[in-house]
Length: 141
Length: 141
Image 1 (tube, each protein chain N blue to C red):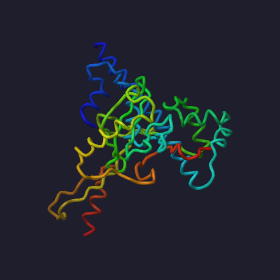
Image 2 (tube, rainbow over the protein chains, first blue to last red; image 1 turned 60 degrees about the horizontal axis):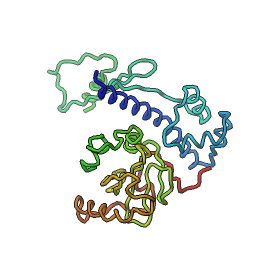
Image 3 (tube, rainbow over the protein chains, first blue to last red; image 1 turned 45 degrees about the vertical axis):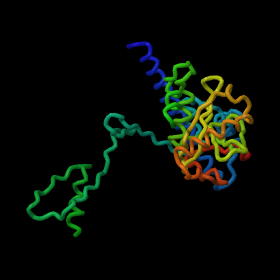
Image 4 (cartoon, chains in turn red, yellow; image 1 turned 90 degrees about the vertical axis):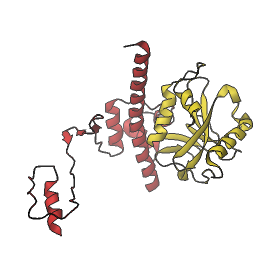
C-alpha cells in the first residue's frame, strides 16, 4: 500500500469516526430541541442528572468537533433524556440491516400487476418473504 | 459547487492549501446529513454556517481547518440546497467585515448560473434548513 493511499484511508476512517460522533450529538440535540418546544428544558438539568458541569454539557453542543463519548456516557445521556437507543447497522455492500439480535428481515409487500388466475402456480409461503401478503392481495379482488 | 471549489476541497490545487482536511469534510458531511450544525445570521464566530450581514443573501460555510481557516461562499437556491460558489481563505479578506468587495463576484457567479432566479429569502432560519441546527443568535441556557 502506498503512503498516499494510506493517507486517504486514514482520512476516510477519521471522517467516519467524526460522522458517527456527530450522529449521537445530533440525535441528542434533536431530542433536547423537541423537549424545549414542549416546555422548559435546561442543559443544567441534564448536567445534574449525569453528574458533570453544565459548562461541559454546553461545550458538547458548541465545539467545532463532536465529542468522543464513551459508550457509558451515551447510555447515561440516553437515560437522562429517558430514551431507549436502538442500534442498527447497514452492511454497505448488500444493504442488509443488522440489529443486536441478528439480521432484520424486511417484510416485503408484493403486489401482482395482474389478477391471479387458477392457472397460476400456488406460491410457496415461507417466513418473511411476503408471500402470505401476496395471497391476500390477490384474493381480495 | 464549481469544479474549482471541488478541486480545492479535494486537495487538487497545484498550490498546497492544506486540503483535503477532515474537519472541512465533516462540516460538509454534517450539512448534507442534516446533523447538528451551528448557524448565525448575525456573523457570530464559531459557527459552521453564517449569513453575511449587509450583503444580499450571501452565506458562508466555515472551515476552521486547514489554517488560516476557509470559507465557501454561496447562496441558497432552495431549502437545504446551498450553492457554494467561491472559496477564500481568511488571509484573503482579513476581518469578516471586509468581504463586501468580493460579494459582487458571488452575485455575478449566481447570475451566470441561475439567470434571474432569485436566491431563497426568508426571515426564518427554518425556511433555509431542515435537520438539526443550533441558532446561535438565540439565547441558549
